[in-house]
Amino acid sequence: MVETKFEELKISPEVMRVIKELGFSEMFPIQAQTISKLLAGKDIIGQAQTGTGKTIAFAIPIIERVNPTIPFVQAIILVPTRELAVQVNDEIRKFSKYKRVNTLAVYGGVSIEKQIEVLRRGVQVVVGTPGRVIDHLERRTLRLDNVQIVVLDEADRMLDMGFVDDIRTILESVPKHRQMMLFSATMPDSIQYLARDYMKEHEVVAVSKDELTVKDTEQVYCEVDYYNKIDTLKKVLEEDKVDSAIIFCNTKIGVDKLAYILHKMRYPAEAIHGNLSQMRRNKVMEEFKSGKVRLLIATDVAARGLDIKGVSHVINYNVPQDPKNYVHRIGRTGRAGHPGKAITFVTEKEREFLDGIEWYVNMKLKKVVYQLPPRTEQKYEPHEEHRHEQRNYRGGRSQQYHQSSRGPDRYALGKF
Image (cartoon, rainbow, N blue to C red; front, side, top):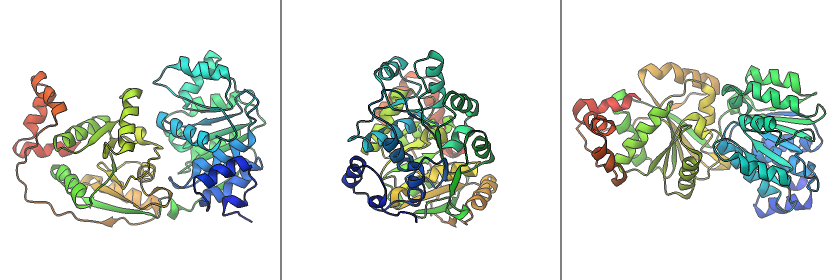
């Protein structure tokens, strides 16, 4: 029998109290099929579309199984990005507030000394990126010999980002007799290899291929030319009455350029990618979550694992060349039962990538058409914060944008 309600689970009154306070009752399928098994100590590979509660699926068993009176790390969760480390850590804190489990997120880009100080005081759960966890292991500020539970969250992305050696090093540092949970939206062969080497009699809980994307997300594509991508984006933002959107570009340069142009068009947009400082990334995310910034222009790495409420649209300004990235991108909208819309801009040369996406998710995306006005020269006044760039950088960035915004050359901006 598979439980469908949280009340049917054998969990402590403290955790159930949090669940009731949050207003949760029905479990998502990945939760219903894994939580009881994880509470029983089984190794699990869980595959489910993004935005369907994978974090809660492993957070509850961890909170129930660690001992808050023992000041040693008993569970470690590995994630691909800093933003996801913070979000997972916050989720575990939320569910463990009546059990007083101490947690810590460790990631790069911030002071390691503060993390060391907290580790010395004693924590039961560590959520971290592989690189920073390795750093702590080498400094001997993190010991894993008391670990009972290991979680790889967004495992496919970590492997894509080249963390496989770090992950194996970390797995070699934990006791052999421990529980392992592996969660991912997609299931490439590399994950099967990890499971073969480090998991014992594991069970796979996987969705079918036609459920890789969230059913509450409307998925469409729009044929565009290089010269009218900006105008099409403007039409989408106006016609769809976009409240909050994440717009994906394939490169950091493309993200910066698009954010700059949207600023000139007086849209509240900000860029986020790996070259930004952690302080800047945190500020951008706070402004986006609060609604001060409506449009977040991002690369795949920067937006991986973001769980933000109220994202009405995901717009693929560039078609992702890897179909798995498409699944991850559109999972930022339509989360937790809320409706969302994913729009992919497709040029003639990108058509083959769209075909690959449709094959991978086993569905045909609906084609939509946005009627654009006749091509005319348009002039956009920059935001005040960008005016100094036009004054201070002679022959540099501002001149480049000024020249490319006149006549036919303006449409070259769509080429990124």
